[in-house]
Length: 315
Image 1: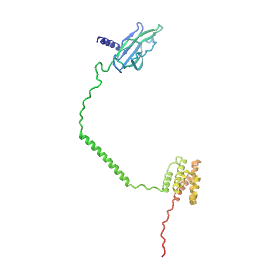
Image 2: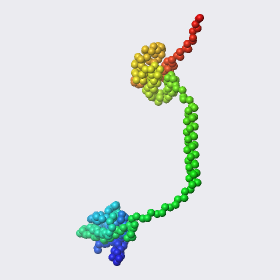
Image 3: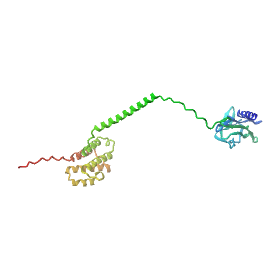
Image 4: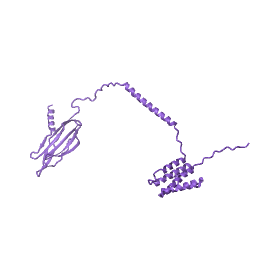
């Protein structure tokens, strides 16, 4: 007990920041710890500072603690001026994972003043005590299980919550059922004929601003695509994959009217010039191409067959 009390006094004195000074020179060194007693894994700040006048030059660095027991977590350098004095040093954040009493050895600082011979000065010795978290008291590894805390279930609140959830589920189910029935009564939109679809897309193209923005090639690519898709649906030829010459060759066996055939040839060849030869048609030519493209679709609409009437037979 006396030994522990004496050791505690030493530790308290060390942590208060003892300061050693050279006999004749204006230099002071100090080693401190922010706490002398710590538990396993606790951080402790160990600081070594050297305060000296500007005419003194420090020749050695402050080394890290050499103890194999202490683990260094962080290091910070100290350099500042205070009242015409220079203060340098290092701050170490240490920790330890072993129980026991440890000593931080004094640090030797070498220095020189003016042209005088090299000298040295040592810091004080520091002591650390690492104790267990229990603090000397017996701890139980396994504690008794606490008694179960009674929980009063609020039945009314639970029933209201279940009722609200059930109503929400029922409402969602009715909404889905009503929506399915509503969709079932709506007749599906009637599909467009190939002619109606082609005229619709041509109208959208004519009203677009592609020509105003200078997208000539894109405009005639779209125009040619609309007609080729129409030819596939109307005449059952692979017009999208064929060139203009191949399309005209595939249409010959169908014996189209001469005027319709010439309009198809004119529009497709003009589109090819705009697409591949970078031809920019004048405004009058653009109107003529658009007009003939619409006429191609309208004139190729199949004529419905006339209903056959029953011939009267004489008796």
